Length: 399
Ligand SMILES: [Zn+2]
Image (cartoon, rainbow, N blue to C red):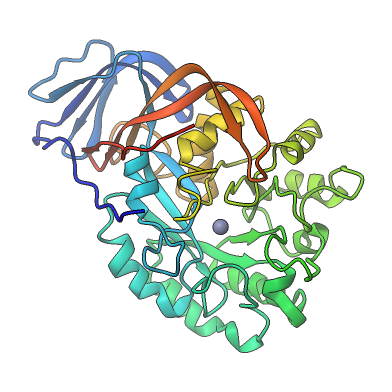
């Protein structure tokens, strides 16, 4: 896949943009109405019926959805890292998404490179979970990156966090048998202490999709180390270490964790969205707090594609449009501890807006194991407005 640096499609004058006549759906404000949205000097200026342009460039968005800028809370966007680091703008503004959150590509040793060469040049807003391991995910997820106790350096992680508080939203922990190796749960204990001292949440990866010979910890053993506000990702994985016991019931610790305020994320990816598991989990009343692609270079052309397509897959599993928009906006912003600045079209905020088309058509939604469901609606990106600038999506053969 070619690298892509998106450029704005419109030169936006200071007098801004007027999105005319779209369906403004903003769960953070309880809005679902045909309205106009005006953006000025990069900020949300006014939302209302029949707004005068006042010199703003008018874009007709009739029959389109106008949403708070979508947030993809788990992907791998360190372009140039191994074979899978994707350009953040491919899954970001190139997919109608304004915020992308890298899930642990960089440990403390690469965080400055990540900031200078990935986050700062990107047109999309780029945030990051710092990897607990010094190695980050430099060689992909299939290695024992936490199995040597020297690979966790609390002091240096602390320094990297303090220098990048604006970008770092939490600490990523690979809780697989492969990553933990002979250390067992000790890295998780150390992550807990570190997260508490740095006042950051953990993002914990479950599901043994790489080294099949390794025994993953049971999800209950992992949850014992998590606190309210931490996130467990890959909630619909079919691989060992997932949320279901051998009889297909949720492990009892899972419901207790949800009630306590631990958050659950989809993390689709190449391996971890299984429709059958998802249906079982959902039937037992556990719903995702956030929807994410776990996108990278190797799943962009399927089965993942982009966040709008992943949202449409959840709609095929029974969620309403409002519910999936909520997951990708206000709920994602809360999960990141950024509800004060992300996930809402509130007047006065930075203008991050996603314009999508809800299409009524039949298509085949495919999960990570190749099983398919017949879907009847899909979401197609039309525009991403990031910091007041409008970007066109990249061409992509969606299913
Ligand atoms: Zn991932």
